[in-house]
Image (tube, rainbow, N blue to C red):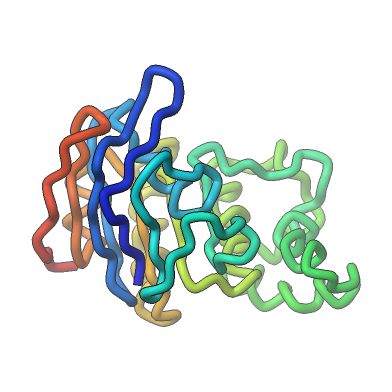
Length: 218
């Protein structure tokens, strides 16, 4: 479904060099590596936020190297959630639908089942600054799912959560993958997370050297 064909990308003093990988439809694919290894840059390249200096990015066998982000049907959830502080929860979740041209009332009605699904319906009128880390993470995930992406990209979604909330969120992610059939790509420095969730994984080292991951059990 997603293929990197010898992709190189330089951002200041940092670079990805000659990266090749294949992520199949329905994978829960983990990219594991230390901080600063280039994991987030890779996610952003999949999302279309960075254009490679060389090499190709393919989606479903079609080259999308130059395709803008809004045409890729990809949703990216950052580690810091990136919620809009001046918007209520329901408007944060429905933001993507509004950007697609849907009216405010219709968009709010469309995402109401998602708020119920992620256990945040009671927070609909709250603002992000009044929420816990776990609540903000659920809002960010619901906002990503609201636009019905084919691919969900997660940037260390568990790193800022306490251990109890982490376990609950792992269950949420496992259920989301199983019930929605999404292709999920998650970056992490935790091999434990990978062994709990991944169907396949790879390791990035120093932004350049890749080890192609073998299948692992969920």
